[in-house]
Image 1 (spheres, rainbow, N blue to C red):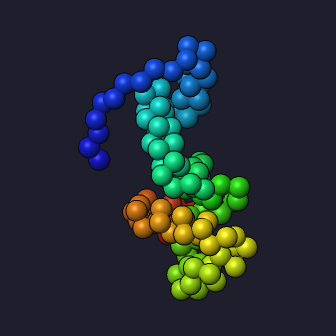
Image 2 (cartoon, rainbow, N blue to C red):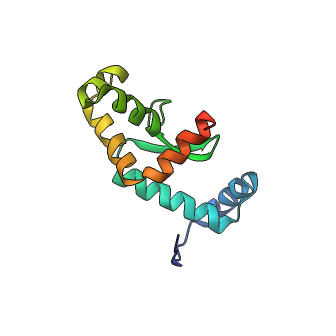
Image 3 (cartoon, rainbow, N blue to C red):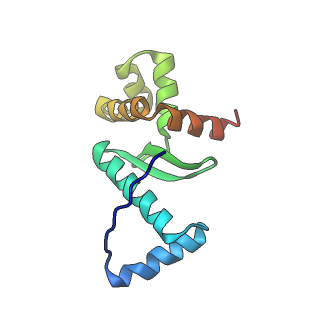
Length: 120
């Protein structure tokens, strides 16, 4: 993926926190900063979606739940219905809609997350 360089500043007292997190993940601070910025931008664009560490790296999931986006997509593929999928999870349809919109926008990433979790 092509990248561009963009600079930003953070509060001086937060720099050590970011450095500690980068060391724990064996990443450069700039790499971790880029990841955090990307994920925050996606969270703003897709309300209700968050990111966490998983078997295959970072994984998109439904905030407030332990369900990954790929799992929502799998249930929807079986039910073929937004309402049935929402009832399955006992969520409002808007949560399912957001997960499916994310999955449509990032099919390769969601597919890779599914494969990593299922060992496929």
